[in-house]
Image 1: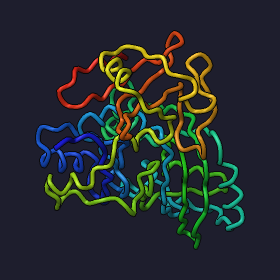
Image 2: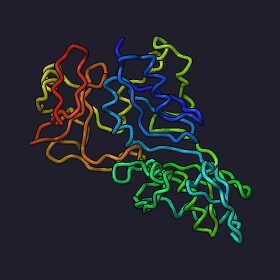
Image 3: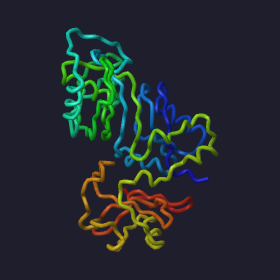
Image 4: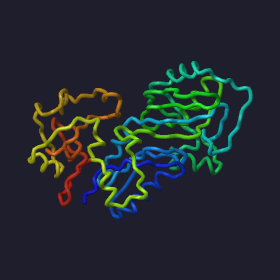
Length: 320
């Protein structure tokens, strides 16, 4: 039994992401398990678990575009921007019209500056912000640039508002709702949140791992190549496979590479449909059966392995 791939799990509200990891870890015992992208206890939906060597592909999963459905209540505010801390109801706030919300939502699409709640999981000087906030510490939350690909009002009946958000990594959905309301002279708290997709991993295909045994879980294991759907792929011959297993660079025939890709002049174009954000050129090397072997980057005119996934028993020559 080879555990190398991903489990598309459905995290229910009330559980932490670590709780879900622990459920699976107890079943798989010595096999390494990790999650790609924390969901707060209040949230539910897609939680991608990397299993075995696939835990080293988490940065690829993090790069995928994500989609959320967030429920908000206008006219209310809280320190955490949700219903888990004390709620206040400021007086004299404007009641936004639907058309105003639609316009404000469109204005938030693109790269925006966002200041998350002090109750977020962001590290501040090595400590989670929410830990500092709950201990009563006063500190300033740094703002950050995030990417909103789509923001749509899908339901509105004051004070209840439902938003669909397609966004990049690091986006705080509760802050999206609060910022949207603030533009229109109001405020908002998030009452529930569902992550409906992370790249190719969708909620309708997610599983509850709790009742499943390890022999059942493996039937739901998704291939490691699902982490690299946004990357160009090339199938290697056996001689090149042996070289990358020992961390050696390889020269690839230009005619076998995807159009526009070369080690000398890599293609830096945006991925299609904004599915993922790529900070440097990478290609995925697979074998003739389509199984993931390594991730390669250009180096001195050749292709150098920086993540290697050899079969069991092979010597791994990973070079970062």
